[in-house]
Amino acid sequence: MTDTTSNKMWGGRFAAGPDAIMEAINASISFDKRMAAQDIAGSRAHAAMLAATGIITDSDADAIREGLLTILSEIEGGSFEFSAALEDIHMNVEARLKEVIGEPAGRLHTGRSRNDQVATDFKLWTRDQLDAFDAGLVALIRALLGQAEAGADWVMPGFTHLQTAQPVTWGHHMMAYVEMFGRDLSRVRDARRRMNESPLGAAALAGTSFPIDREMTAKALGFDRPAANSLDAVSDRDFALEFLSCASICAVHLSRFAEELVIWSSAQFRFVALSDRFSTGSSIMPQKKNPDAAELIRAKVGRIFGANTALMMVMKGLPLAYSKDMQEDKEQVFDAADNLMLALAAMEGMVRDMTAQRDNLAAAAGSGFSTATDLADWLVRVLGLPFRDAHHVTGALVGMAEKAGCDLPDLTLEQMQSVHPEITNGVFDVLGVENSVNSRMSYGGTAPAQVRDQIERWKEILA
Ligand code: ARG
Image 1 (cartoon, rainbow, N blue to C red):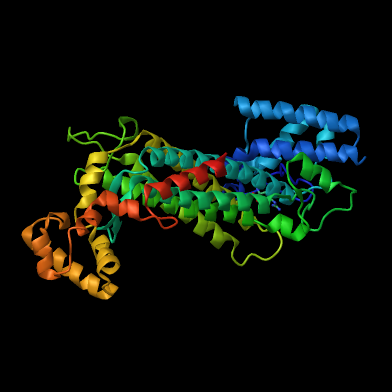
Image 2: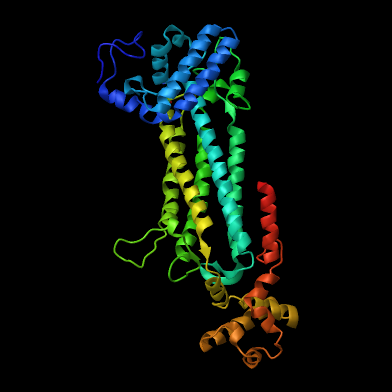
């Protein structure tokens, strides 16, 4: 539907409209309409400022405000007709404003450019996402704290190389993820603080000769201050890159936990039972209950990190100030944000609903010679052996138990003494998994008392 006789937007300079292919590559309305509310908020702040500084009349500003509110309700109600010929959300809204209020619409773009406009809209949109990200993390952390509190002293195997290493507590394992998502939260808050400067009023790139008040528009839009360099303001997309970086790291954390849930819910492990609400069945195998949500969360990191990489490459090597390349910024962020919020919500739901299989965890905790380190430590502490010798003696006892097909606590004192004659009955105290975890009282260790301290600390942080 290309109009070749005139141009809808810049008729003054252009004798012909764009080729259909040009319109297809150029138009962003199909996706940037998601920023309609932010675009209208930015325009309202700008119009109010233009009136307050005497650049336009109050009656023009009133007409603009009323017209923008009408357009917002048309968009929210679904009756607004978006046009690719009008390129993007900014031109679509402005063209409609002309239809709704007539002549004053043409005054809205005074002292402003689409370059500062789009930077403002996108920043406002991304800021909302950072707030949703923050809320999603807090909800997930609370769900993890609930699990940790319920099972602060439930024993389970701790792993290295996915081989049984030492007994830990369920609460301790949950709290490890609280720390990870807590760092994500601090990154999000840090990014929000840094990004909260207003690009509006930077105009095309050099600022404007109109006596605008950038403090006023910044304040109206909830920014802490106006961005201090107009060239930077229109060409900065760090806020989007930081959002994607925070999202990527968080998605990595989500994928690690998702992987554990996949393993833990398997018939071989049976460490957790996922709820029906967060699992699926199989169309052919009636016995199956699949951890699909966990698998999908595990996969989401791919597209989220892909978005991060893509935008880094879009921005790489761009000269100052605005280049149209930067229109390619939005879809990446939109997609990453949608999928991140979904993954966070799904993980929170799964964590709230899942049931730790306490008996299975305990049974597994004692297997695999998980208290071998406790035995070695006992030899050091009680018999005064150097740790390397104790390691060697313990290794021989593990070998003996392995051959006998039993666990360490099942060896008799005589068997133990055949390896080291000074071993006494006291050794059996440290071979139990409960004693093992209770003894790990170093700060940040797995002892239930330590875990409960950390739960309290986090509750205070979130309060
Ligand atoms: N749709 C454009 C974008 O997303 C708006 C800015 C256009 N500016 C320009 N100088 N052509 O970046």
